[in-house]
Length: 417
Ligand code: AMP
Ligand code: GLY
Image 1 (cartoon, rainbow, N blue to C red):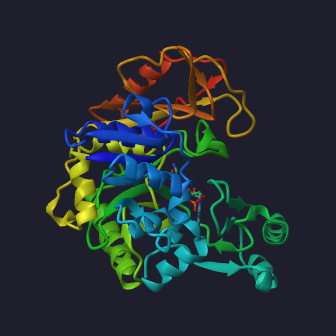
Image 2 (image 1 turned 30 degrees about the horizontal axis):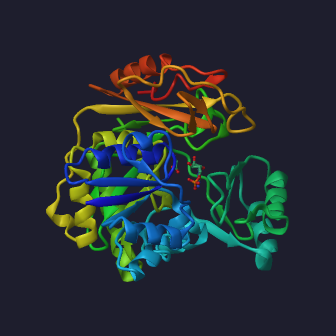
């Protein structure tokens, strides 16, 4: 089979790495890809937003199906575009991708299908006063979420009442997050411990993939600014069979059934961000794709030929498949450019990348024979272990072999376990 993968991050390197292991993969192309995906297949110079150009390529190279890594093309309707042209794509339809594309949409979806989540109020210019009154009448912390896609930056958690009111006005009236925040969801603050569940759906049934936990803050001890993610572990030690059974019954099944009831076509990955409050799991967010860096620990723990799973999604025969989880734990550590998630310098020479361990490239470019930094998150170093601690020791040992000027990584990923 010939496959086209869309995207260019560490997630896409991990997806490409897994696809390339299948004996059923004849040719793998990645648009636009990165230095890591180039080790698994052939990168092509087409942006994920250039649907027509992608379609020309798909016809010329007899592509059998497409896998979409990032959310933007999905929210922009890449699934529907290729469906009209009879090319299967792993990912949700434009309408279903609204689960990630609009926080207000996803809250209404959860309410409609009785899926446990934080209570909320939707606010825009027409009911701004009501929003301000809501903040007045409730107590801190205040959770304000931009409705639309904001590259992971659209959530504010604020302690001070006046500051929360000012932020709400700035979001709605002054486009603090561009048009993404002309509508805002004010949510009840949930105090608990977070984890993520990944589900593969064929539109009728589903399979649960290995769970994971990511570490979003830049600083050790979960301090400082939010990032795209500084590390991840799988499996999550506190997620017991009992908790997973609860998540499946109260969240996954109602989500899959809800998608069908609402006629939302979904043939792809669903990322469910959860928080365990006491003994109850509640949904913090849906994403319409895999996570980054979670993919860099989830893919290594799936033993199946991933093309069997993708074929089953396309043919709606997922019930015939069984997910085979690797017994081993897997951890990943993100190597970042010093300064990230704020300003940072690029084009630092990276030493020690060519090792045998599982290193997924993100913000890297190649000039002659040198690998140079080219982004905030530069690479993800994944490693297996008999348990989380052991995997972390291995990932840290591997990370130590890599260096570039101002390299920064968290040395405490997963140490609470
Ligand atoms: P989201 O983009 O919705 O996942 O939010 C980003 C992060 O903000 C989450 O990973 C949580 O750490 C935090 N967060 C979001 N919603 C809530 C909430 N209702 N209560 C507490 N923390 C939240
Ligand atoms: N690691 C968080 C995300 O992919 O959204």
